[in-house]
Image (tube, rainbow, N blue to C red; front, top):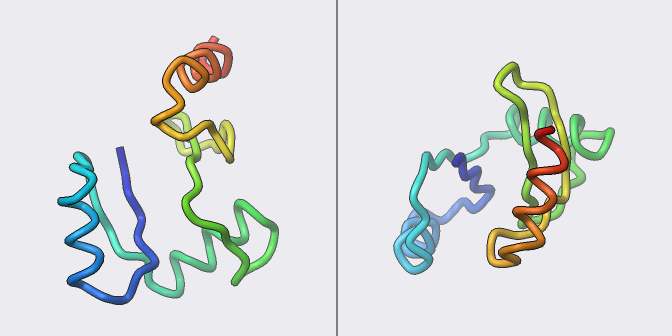
Length: 85
């Protein structure tokens, strides 16, 4: 799991990781990464919506954006099974 933060406040960012027990890799997006993700996901730099759940394959190909959120349980499992067939 990779979490990309766009928050510019260290204390809020770290507190949310702890509050929600978010296990995985955490990075903060700089302008270059944010613009690249925005262009990939929405077709233009500067436009983004958070949170967003996206799935890439092992080669880095975007499989799906706007997945169901992790707390959706069975809906997300069904979606992942369909995508990974």
